[in-house]
Image (cartoon, rainbow, N blue to C red; front, side, top):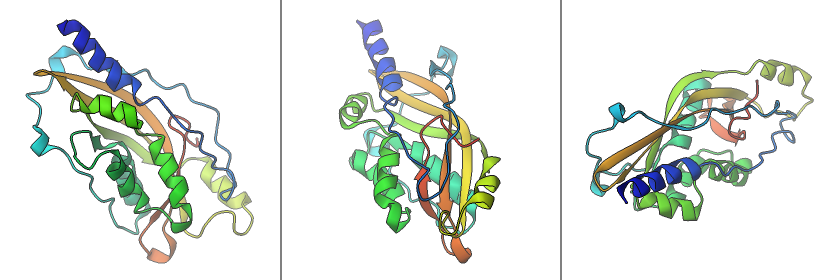
Length: 219
């Protein structure tokens, strides 16, 4: 029975994040995504790296605001971390983790950004299942860089296709998930890559425009 419970937890942690939505980046930005990238399969972390006794619900992580800044890369890094950081033990529920990113979205793109973000988060039923294990997630950044095709897109765009101060940053990192059954900690990790589109016009605070489909970044 203990093995069955542990296996159920691993399946819940691995399986709940695979539902993705198709994000159209072409329209207003005049861009085409590159071909789909083969993502690295998610893997459990070896037993030697099992964490200490997990935090209690009273110590649960809470949604933190995305950094308010006019520096594009700093903003992109903050968005990336915020996108992958959540804790099912937080009483605010799934919507509170979506809202922190919608709050920094460009006003005209807020609805689209909300859809993009939900494509990265577990669905409602998966969230409930993961909550039973106190599952939490975060991102370890490896690199944040401007994709090579971005300068070409800017040069070829017609007036109005790309918003003033727009930038694109492709993020590479490792997604970590941790959950517990009884007193046993189970952890998985998965390499991820995606592209964030932002706008930082005239030294004003940056805003979030769109987020590419997971593992289908601009190259």
